[in-house]
Amino acid sequence: MNPNIQVGIIMGSKSDLPVMQDAVNVLKQLGVGFEVTIVSAHRTPQRMFDYAEQAAGRGLKVIIAGAGGAAHLPGMVASITHLPVIGVPVKSSNSIDGWDSVLSILQMPNGIPVATVALNAAKNAGILAAQIIGTNDDAIANNVLAFKKDLKEAVEKTASEVEQMKF
Image (cartoon, rainbow, N blue to C red):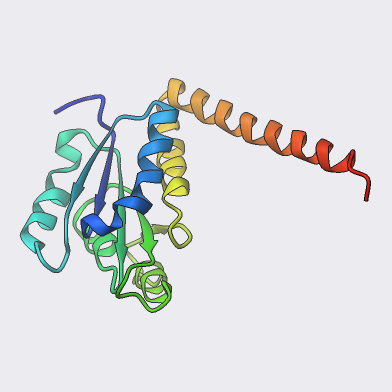
């Protein structure tokens, strides 16, 4: 068990990595430890079961699961673990414009919740994971607060620039 790794980032295939990289980047920025791997609900179901069953025992606090197409990975993982699971619908090559992924992750039955972010919004999944961890970790909470302050300041700067434009 590595106490510095608090978030598991999993995806159905390597083709999801360009989208899931945004979660990696924001977790690094926010100082949250993470691991990344491939866990396919359809091609490696035993690997998925093992990952979900062992996640809490290895110290994970949140799982971010990205999947495209039928996108069963987040829901199946959520059905196995008690940890919060954040689903990232991925617009993949076999996707129906991404809607199949969104609906597969969003429409979970009662009792098996999956927090679902927008299509390809792995960055928001990373931020949400950090916010969840920040409820019990002051350092991470402070990092999230600073991140949000930076967002606010960037918008205020842009607003000021637009207001100074001559239309």
